[in-house]
Amino acid sequence: MIWRRRRESRDGGAGGSTGERAIIDIGSNTVRLVVYGGTMRAPTVLLNEKVTAKLGREIAATGRLADEAMAMALRGLKRFALLLDDLGVRDIETVATAAVRDAANGPEFVAELRSLGLIPRVISGEEEALLSAHGVIGAFPAARGIVADLGGGSLELVRVAKGATEGASTLPLGTLRLPDHRKRGRAEMKKSLDKAIRKAGWDLSGHPPATNGALYLVGGTWRAMAVYAMAARGHPLSDPHGFALDAAAAQALAVALAGSDSDALKGRERLSAMRAEKLPDAAVLLQALLARLAPEEVVFSSWGLREGLLYDRLPEHTRAQDPLLAGVGVFAAERGTQPTLATRMAAWTLDAAPAREHGSERLRLAATMLSLAAMQIEPNIRLPQAINWALHKRWVGIDGVGRAMLAAAIAANGNQLALPSEVRALASDEAIEEAVRWGLALRLARRLGGQSQRSLEASRLVVKDGALVLELAKSHEALFGQPTEKDMKLLAGRLGLGWRVDVVPEIVR
Image (cartoon, rainbow, N blue to C red; front, side):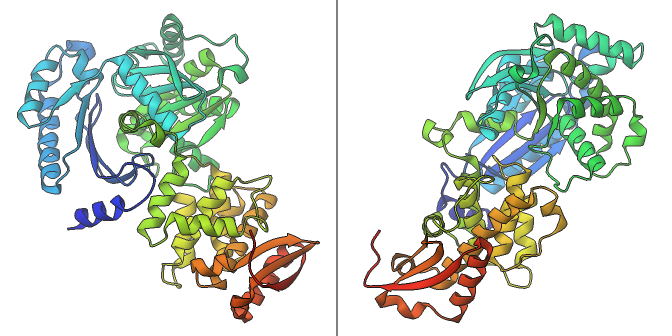
């Protein structure tokens, strides 16, 4: 019943193709099931479960999938198949990567998968690289640089720019294989990894970083590294997706982790024992990548191969959608706010509170949708919950400054001008002030006529002759009540303007 309601709710939303889709990703470290819902341009994770089978743990030594690992993986996959059948999810894509494609007994394992009713696809290293790159492009439409997807069995590298990919390659440098390069210590390990990267044709060390673009890090071990870095810096956000470091800071992080003891890392909050064990070796790999690729910055991406599979199936017009607006649009619609209403309100407030130096109209529209959705929450918990949406929900296509501006606009819409310290830590006072004006203008629009379409048509908010002017059609003159007067004064004060109300025969646009 819950899943049926989810499906019905999402199918009525905006932002592109909807309906549940499942990806089963059989990797060298983990076997994972993820069920996605909402718009596939910015999908919501409905179910995420993994089995740490370590299928690739004996590939280097024996060339085969270990019997124990296969048994553990198949046990988990039987559960996944049953779950999906019970949930009624029919759109299922199963892919296997380095361990299965490299193992001598990989075909036997694939045959077992087919006996479970799954239709597995063993993808090549090049295809794995391209899919990860497409996931990054989906999350960061303006991505330019190199994607480095670190799995258990391999490292995939591919260039991205202007929505296209180039030069995909795969290297046998997955986390399960990194210890083979560490036999003589981490100093020698770095030399060995550096040699492997250079031999594969990846050496941009002679180019200026600005021309090389960013290094986009994909994979669970890289995300664990981001979580470590965020905690060390006291970063106010919780989601590692989109967390960025300049090259110098990334180098300092890699040096610090390369010299760490994995046992000491295991006690860290939000770091699993498996990831903590692999972080020092991964940090040495990052040092080698930074030396050879010379990126301008490092960006951590939670979107990779699985999201690339979803992105590849989208029609061109859906790919072209803004991922932030697609995701927020569905989220708000599920909470009683249709994007059409939010668009009308954003247009009504445009002249008085536009996006100027710090924001953008896409960000202002997203803030409008979330602010209106927040009004459906009980008043006693409304603002904390809505601010958490802005700061900590996994939105795509937004940075920390944008999140802070979303939170500030939501708070101002609720007439809460004292903002949490974490919001102010993310953005400048000027950016916060711009977003506060968005929220106050929306508050006026929302309360003027109870969000009715007619009230928006019979009124207009403009800045004219150095004053904030509310124009009202004669037929709707009575809408200007005491609450509206308070909202006008508050907004005009933030704008540094006087204010007045003009009653006109009709609103001419």
